[in-house]
Length: 257
Image (cartoon, rainbow, N blue to C red; front, side):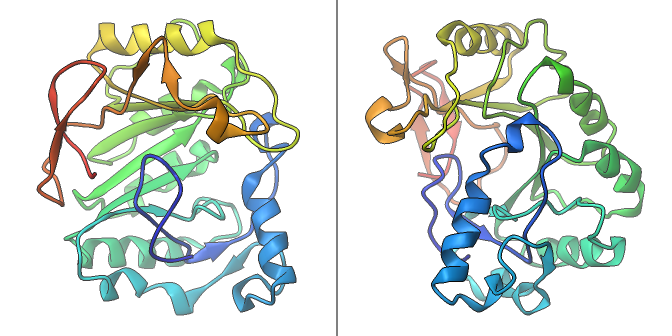
């Protein structure tokens, strides 16, 4: 994948790895798997093996060709910390992110145990945001693993949110994204799950981003939570000098518009 993304909290996607396998309930109706199957049917060469985990070394230096600073989601179609991605390859990905210092990179994993294990072997650039996915209370241990890493910015993607997450430990966490599942088999998200997390973030002083309600028609369902659109981002030095006022809090936040 390349320039342009429909994901609300990023601008572009970059996939030096494609393919994955399911490891927890949040993976059940994986959007990336559906997308990979479509791309395979279209004859896209990077997806000739469908959703089988595949290193794409020819894609490694792509961000270096993008001269306009932007926010880039790394491996929207895979998981960089999958057990079959060698450490040396992960280090090459991080080296590219270091060299492409004018961009902001967002890396997200469900394999937080391997992330924690490999973190001492990784040189963590300041422009890399590291996140973990947590879909229900059985997987909050991923947050503890994230906290042990050397990432400058740490975030949580609580999507698809499949259950309540009371009493989250948010110390050391800079950003929380919440979203319901989307797609033909989407499982519902209770409004109180989202509002409780919002309130926890407000109490802890953590930036809160409500991505979507989800459902079969996510555009129709929208992303308004109790009359507001929550699009706060971590208050770090922006790669693009754009600021807007969050409708949720009224504070000026460094964001990419």
